[in-house]
Length: 159
Length: 399
Image (tube, rainbow over all chains, first blue to last red; front, side, top):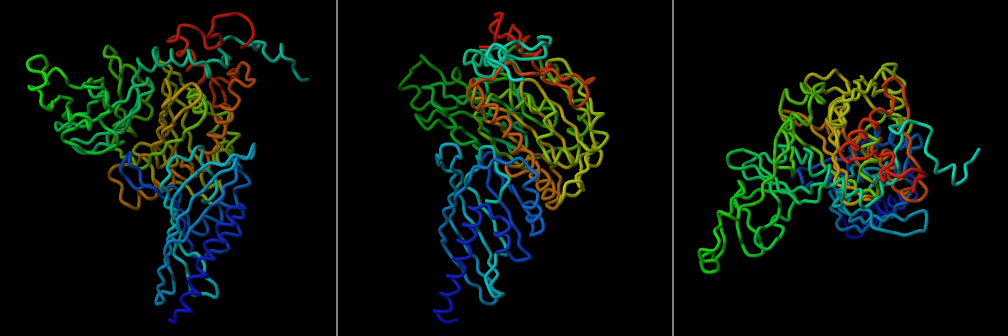
């Protein structure tokens, strides 16, 4: 593949990741899920030094995420908005598999509705597999690997 | 019709056992008394034995009475708990939450201890101390430790306390066969730090009237006829058992019934016991959840959440238990976030207009009866030497 073509793919992948962050910031979870392939799988994980084990805190396929998002209005949820700052670290393009593996650093801030004070909510990384087989890149797999394990009262939303 | 200041602060027209004074959630002096009269005297759950599976494993623990502890499994397999304090110059000995060490060495001056608590090394002992001091007299301070009720490590700071079985009594009898048929194993641990009083959290675990807050529970439990037959059973020492129920998980869109269970637990069954002063065994379908608290002050609390399955789980079974647990109780679960919103809200209102808090629902001890809270505060009042409805023992309005 030519350098130009490779660069173009990388740019498309970056755009996908960043567009996803913008949609999540806007709480447009359905719009974000539209960026995902039908075989999408979403996981939030962390390592616990306390019990010395890997933990999985959320784990859903596309249907499960769709259901989670659909049911959000039924629940009582803290509405404090989150803002993501993401920086794509590495993109490994696998032309044979027509996918790319992406590691993105993400820092998430919360800003109180009452007063507008911002504070750090979580740090971690997105470990993504992006499907390049279609007309536009789509998320095939995301593992949100959290370093932060103390998340206050938690959230109902995907990070 | 709204109320003016006098009316707002008037005591409710209920027995004094049916309301509490808001100061029990806010007063620094009362918090200090709780540490002395309650937390320093009771058996409390520090961790699970599966967190220290190997000889010389250790786990640190911040005790609610304000002591930093170190739980260690000795080479003899026995669990012991010590103050995590070096007897030399008072340094914290272990800085990490868990690990393994045959010899535990203080980084400051390299005094070393084994996992039985013996001091095994004082650097340049003879040169510095001669015959005035001997390492055998400078072992760690050990506290009472027992393992039970599902392999949980319990500690008690009171050297003269009765045994653990006496403290728990028969409160866990209803789920004992589930807890002790096979070894259990922790798969989940997280903390929620909330600006609230620890008792607000335990209150939430002690009543089900707040199920209106949970869409998930309204669909899967409240709409089932058996829900209304659940009954609270009080036990001595302030413990209370909630009646069992079979839950209809598939009533919540996107959820399915639990394919796994626990030994002795009906498929999709639910058992729950609230233990004084603030921990809960919550056995729901395929996972056991244990809540414990680490009060940092009257208005700041760490709540610890542990999820457990069976030690013999296959990776598929463990994966299913983890998904089931976290779908409801994880940091992104359907219910836990809502429960924490509730106690966070109570925390925000602390000292900002709260008046007497009502614990007055009576429904023949059925599920929306508030007997669980009343029973807790009866024990609290006994240990504190005055009623929770009047902690300053003065007549008149809430202050």
